[in-house]
Image (tube, rainbow, N blue to C red; front, side, top):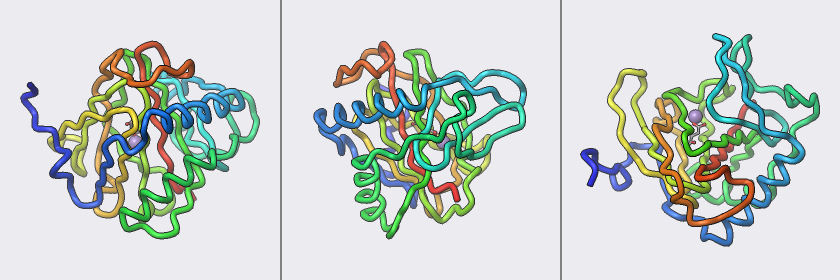
Length: 215
Ligand code: SIN
Ligand code: MN
């Protein structure tokens, strides 16, 4: 039993969560797409402005990819280590993203970027806002694959209280509208809880994909 309520039933305006929207077969198909994508755009650990390395390995697909280095955060058309263009957003990923955003009330969503976050069993992601996109009217669509994660959804200031949400493989979360700039992060991974076994998943870990409209 958790001390914190799971927010799933009482999400703030602009946040939609579809529990296990993707059945295991669809999760495996997306993980196949991720594996192909990572062959073309190998995962790497970006540096932050401070010089410290990001905990998770990352990659991207789409015409733009989110990157970080000692100059800061931004979107770039080329992989910073290979110098090659990011591979395209897999067709099925784009299609499911379009279905979910339409159901959440955002018509004509055309993502141009997808960040791939690869969490080892010990991975996490500090509280942050998705703040590098040109137009915050477009939502972010997050796909969870692999082990469960404790996701924190906060307010509009870093110090605001956070609510805890366990994200499972196959869950899809849209955050947009009045919630587009909420702080969020991943406090921990629950190693070994993945319902699917795919070679692209780190041992006990998780992969998160976030579709964005960057420009
Ligand atoms: C992110 O905020 O970029 C990823 C969130 C997640 O891994 O669930
Ligand atoms: Mn984010």
